[in-house]
Image (cartoon, rainbow, N blue to C red; front, side, top):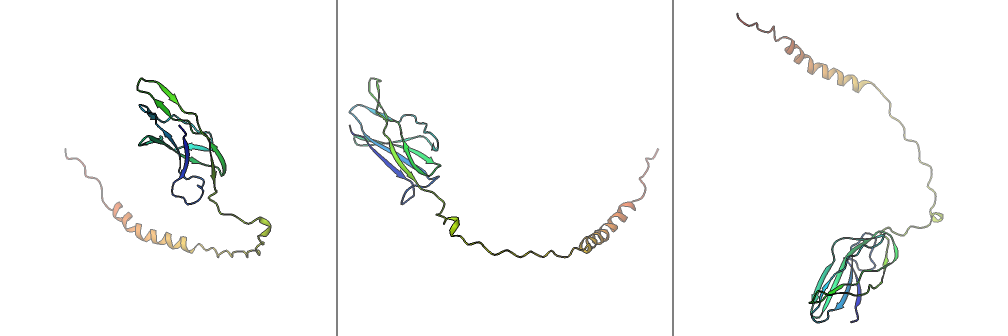
Length: 165
């Protein structure tokens, strides 16, 4: 039973980049009368498991896929656990884990070194506009013109009626 380990990156043509969903696949041959179950996996930082693994059975083999994300660039060695083989009599056998090397690229573009960047000329000062109290005075006059009639109407309501005895 020679398992093969595959590595797929979702929606990329080249190497996966930081933050991409990466499916780590392992294909194993299923012995007669056995059932395959994925083993629990808690990867170490900076690798994070995104969800439960998937098992796809086709013919006499099964593919176990773990969705992961990597948060740091560079080369990473992942060690997903071997799947569990369940027997008809309740016995459990586990396959050994296999290491897979993953190269994660950066999302950021390549930047030239600081020595190749020329300093820019000094920027001129931005002139400050003149300050005047005219807008505030106009707003105060407009508020007085609008609120004076309302105040006059409110005060003019008269006296409160008294209760008849």
